[in-house]
Amino acid sequence: MADKFDVIVIGAGPGGYVAAIRAAQMGLKTACVEKWVNKQGKTVHGGTCLNVGCIPSKALLETSHKFIDARDHFGEIGLEVGDITPNVPKMLEFKESVIAKNTGGISALFKANGVTALEGTGKVLSNNKVEVTGKEGEKETYEADNIVIASGSVPVEIPPTPLTEGLIVDSAGALEFTEAPKRLGVIGAGVIGLELGSVWSRLGSEVTVLEAMDSFLPMVDQAVAKETQKLLGKQGLDIKLGARVTGSEIKDNEVVVKYTDSKGEQEQTFDKVIVCVGRRPYTQGVLSDDAGVKLDERGFIFVDDQCRTSVPGVFAIGDCVRGPMLAHKASEEGVMVADIIAGHKAEMNYDAIPSVIYTSPEVAWVGMTEQQAKSEGIEVKTGSFPFSANGRALANNAPDGMAKVIADADTDRILGIHIVSQHAGELIAQGVIAMEFGSSAEDLALTCYAHPTTSEAIHEAALAVDGHAIHMANRKKRK
Ligand code: FAD
Ligand code: AMP
Image (cartoon, rainbow, N blue to C red; front, side):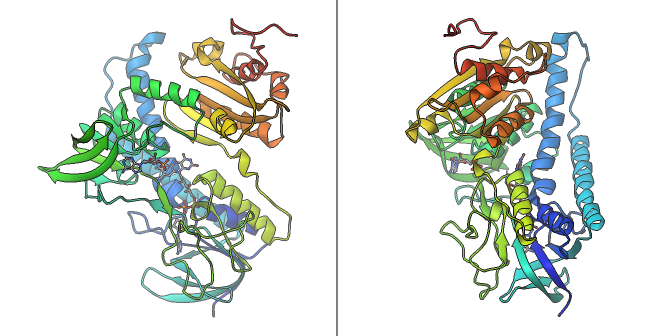
């Protein structure tokens, strides 16, 4: 038997690596097992997020956004740039360099914090043991007082569109196109589908998004979702709602996608198709038969509110457990679990987890939508404010979008904030803090905001909850 640890974490994505660093910071002898091997054959940390998720997608979103800004909008503000062309291979190089910096950073943090990095595939055995199988198949068994499973998730595949090298790809494949496909089909109008569709649309693809549901972004307040749909449509994304993909055929190096909509059977031909129909928990090979760790009916590792599994001393966090599949949710669970293992009281507020779609403009939200609150029988009052009435947004030449505050009609407590605007992903942090502190809409309304900032739109939306927005014509009289 090799070393004994206080904590062994399986998986070094944003859940696992954060749990490992926090545990080490708390003075616990910690190891983290990771099996991800990059294109150069090197074991790398960071998981989906750093290698094929949040970070590389944002590198391509930002570079493609800069291209559109320079080509289509710089002239509007007096900057003549002449011809500008995207160099996709160079963009991919930049993206790879960003991945390398980020993943290398995690390895450096492990060293700095004294986390032992174990390379290979970790498997939870019974009696608090973890077996690690290395790249050559060599096995080593370690003992740990506590085990944290952070094995993440993988893309869902659907039978109508089996992945086909270079033609039908998943989100990771869509980060590798070396040129913009002429006709690109995106299956699924969720967060990832809209982000990747935006990247390639900006770089020249004709993008059609096929979404089975009739509603657009049902998790976002519908006023904000409608505005988003309008703005993305104007950019050229052809978003077809109520279009369920039922089959596909490869013909002459093209993909014919079959779908049904309200008019019946349809088909459309694409040069490439990205399947973005969600992700599923990844637990393959993580649990031995006698580990005793239970899964729920959807294949997630079953955990309580504090991420304890059915086996004492074994925790699970991140995408492999219930809750939103988001990097920051995984990381916060990692911190909570490390603190619990270190003997502290810790819990998470699952009601104040922000979500962001990094389209342009960005969509960001925290808490309930107006529709959700009403469906739960909560009486609400709401305030909205358009960025076209915000001085800084106009100065930024980014007047699109709106902010909406949803508050409890009785108590004024903020139930949700939903925004579509430039940098909404940054703006939402103030909504998260407000909700974390249990603020009322009036608390935000009475807060002094710096001028000129786009944050002032949130201030105005909070003022508008009681009809007192300053920069809006049709406001109520103060009683
Ligand atoms: P993962 O990041 O999936 O990491 C799990 C790790 O465990 C992997 O490295 C895997 O190799 C390892 N592993 C699994 N089994 C074993 C084993 N047996 N032994 C050793 N290692 C193992 N989220 C956001 O919050 N913001 C975004 O902008 C965002 N954008 C995204 C864009 C795309 C294209 C995708 C695909 C995802 C995006 N996400 C985003 C989601 C985000 O990536 C995940 O929510 C996050 O990575 C989950 O973290 P995790 O630690 O639970 O799992
Ligand atoms: P998300 O779970 O946010 O990544 O979004 C995935 C989206 O894919 C959801 O909005 C689903 O409705 C959609 N979806 C799933 N299966 C299909 C299908 N066969 N055809 C079209 N859209 C689909």
